[in-house]
Image (cartoon, rainbow, N blue to C red; front, top):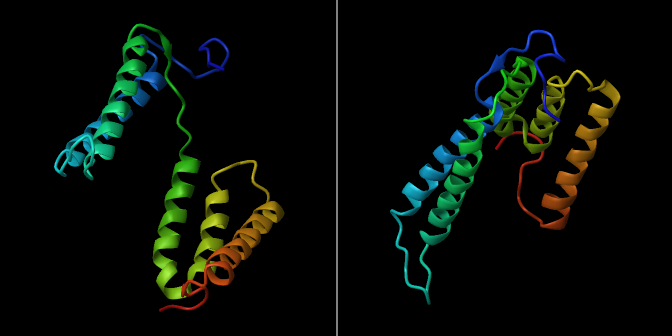
Length: 159
């Protein structure tokens, strides 16, 4: 579904398709990064591939997909997208909350806080389903990492 400037107030027509152009540029930049850093590792031979083959090939593939997205985007018109900062801020805060609490509180409280704080990014999020998701995820973490795999992950309390 594409947004049309006539359908939504405040949207402005532009000469290129901004979403596709931005996606193409992002893929080209990320692919260049992986291809460049992957090429610094040994490539090996066709019989014994080295550690640099996969990141280099995937980087080149991402660059090719980015070019395929970018070229048609430059010839199609589109609308300037409205940016909603609420989800961006909520996800940033939730990642910071996880990073700041994982060592002090343990994996379960950090995960719980991350899920609850990231839910504020959506206007559709409701308290009970959010708390249920956070609790269920914490139970899943305990089942997988502690009970299932027996990993010595500090679930509660710092290290």
